[in-house]
Length: 333
Image (cartoon, rainbow, N blue to C red; front, side, top):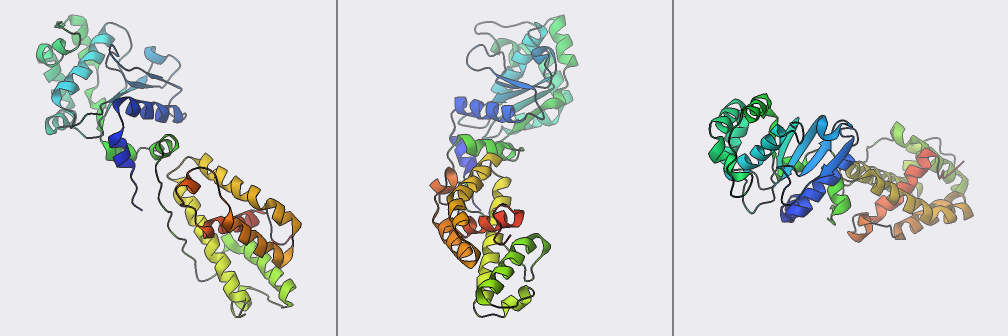
């Protein structure tokens, strides 16, 4: 499936990129206990922050420096931003970050990539050429001189903790796509169709057995298993259609579970349930299956799945078989 997340991120403004990273940090509750956002003049080289402890800037924290430029990040911005953090840390305004990530969707120039790849040489470069690399870039019309305190902070900082994330690397971070789709209206595309195994497998056994009972009741047959059903001119094709729908719904949920926030899929399932439950309760047997399937296929659901038409009829219908599988809406009790 071809998705457009990379193009969307590249079109974000600098403020929008910072807001996206802030929301992603806030979503990473297992990694961070809190977050902060600094932007505009006087940000001290800090944009988005993820705190690892309740000590906040006095404890361990990660700095996400967002650079939404019209070109790859160059040496000027790279060194000046690092210099700001080192300088203000030496003034004891915060501890040195444990990770320093440049979020630069358009990437970085080759020389910056070289410096990031050689952290020991980067440390030497900053200390030996502080005045031209950093000192004159921190405060306007001021060249901050090297001091013993500043030198101590430079030497105590682990420059291997500096990273750069371009748009491709950014998108592969856990849950980033989910947060992006929640806050930016992107067509998530279509999920792949389900792959229906030739033989009925254990995971689909509950709803298949329920349908076999219904066939026997409705047609007056004595099917013992699905193999008997497959040979029937009416029931056989009907069962195969239901299995295709089941596996289309399964593929849909598996696919979007990896790309969207789980709340969106929960809302989709709830919409299907609420849309068919009254029909389900007012019917029984074969009529229940056919009427619920017909109604499910016509349902409109909330959110991006309906807006972008990425929930086919078969997925809506197949979701009902998943309900039957779990016993929420069993076809035959």
